[in-house]
Length: 128
Image 1 (cartoon, rainbow, N blue to C red):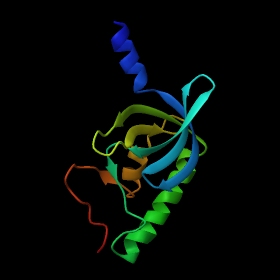
Image 2 (cartoon, helix red, strand yellow):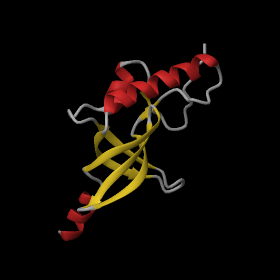
Image 3 (cartoon, one colour):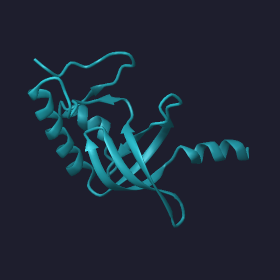
Image 4 (tube, rainbow, N blue to C red):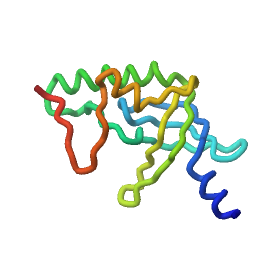
């Protein structure tokens, strides 16, 4: 039983302070991993794909900047991370990211058109 509890706690929830919004779906957080202990971790938003700042066309790059700004405003300075996962191949962390009101960044990106549901192996085309 202790093993199950330890694994559940490993994956959240975590309170996190925003250090930097890299793009709409990638954020650097100071994550409270233990009382009085924080770790700087780059987190990708679980299950969403958004335009890239280094995209193929100017329209994608402009949309990526707008999407990143929307993420900055939506998240603010604090977030709650749940369903934290780490990819074995890359070591990158992904999580469900919610703002201080409990609203999902994943859902907001899709609602605003700045994101689409991520499908493994597929590439989203943002250029006309």
